[in-house]
Length: 610
Image 1 (cartoon, rainbow, N blue to C red):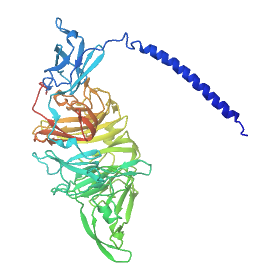
Image 2: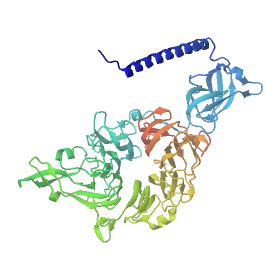
Image 3: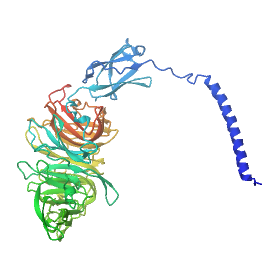
Image 4: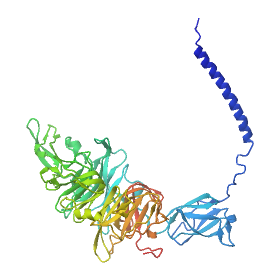
């Protein structure tokens, strides 16, 4: 006889009762639902407006400020009062209200505002919004459709710098692109590419320019603090000591270039490399002994210095006397000593590496050997000065070869600082600069650029542009952007107007008339802001040196992302242009892939502006 489980019986009974109750409740709900369906759920609500702003192209399809444009609409007649010239609705281009000239049941004519960028059009009536077509505001800046590389861009990565080719003339514009991108899908190498203004991407293997096939090895790595690192190039600089066919200095985070590390096995590059003018590696033949005492002659790279692999080089600069100044969050200089390096029977190297203290800033010669006269402890040249306490984000070199270093830094060489410091040519803190900047930035500085230009009288000027998470610089208001003179004082001519909706993430001074006789320096800016000086400017600005957004240069619509570089360039039809690179996906309402060429018409003056 089976024993009855009272707990199981009670559980089943409870379940049955619950199901009955649920069915009764649901039945009651269904009765209520049936009754409610008999009633109009929208009874007493507002009738939808019989108004439309059609997506058809307006006439004309694009226009400049003060010009009339007619859009196709329907249903506006009853909201138009011809007798007194009033309207019950408002019309906007890129969030800027427009003057309404006239309206019928099928057309709406407006006047383009004096200050406006390209963008979406919409009509507001009785708190309802009706969207129309994207409207292109005419001006002096537009996308160069002939530079088609913007449609593809580099594969799977950011362009961190854009470097003009040393052979550029007034008739040519070619550039090296550096970053963490790959050559193509399925290829795990890249980091460097070359483009010109007419064809876009140049083929790898092009003689005298980019005679390489691979570049650096792409990949992700983890440092000692479990931070994820992406291999890539931060930039490139030509060797100043070479007067003809200058060599090129590559720097960033990489251990392989072309296939040298793979071939030599025990050898690795160290985040910086001095290459030939065509970007090939300079090599020499050296003799190495294997474990059996047999000698092997092996071709090896001549440049063998740098930093430990996880210690990225943020910036590196060439000096006139043939040296390299490297800046970054590193602690150690690493150098391969060929004199004590051996190999195996298969010509695979077993390197002897020398580790020397070098914190934040160091100087090397043209084979990568550490200069022990630069920034060393006066009591022991095997020890480095203390360097930065905090994080270095960026650096730039001035004409006198002094170096500006910025970041989230609270001390440098043991001296308290406020996120920015200047080292003189000998690597020592410039005390006069430190005194001039006073309280400096009250927040982190993310980026710095140094630019020289000549004014109308031919006088040379040098400016330092800083961008970051600060609101004041030396006690003066600065909304994350400040322009300094080379001595550290704030440039009084430039006044940044009010930014709304976001921040600045990039700024650089670019001469828009590089090939002309008279310089036209302007500040190219990107960010997350939506308005500048009360006018909708979505993420992109070209300001004059006073901080004014001249209308004809600020007609592009929405920008989404961040710039890393901006360079003067000829366009695809050999007129004045601006090449923008970085990490961005939208420009002027169009899909982008981290690069775009702009046409910049310096002659056109649509609004009688300066």
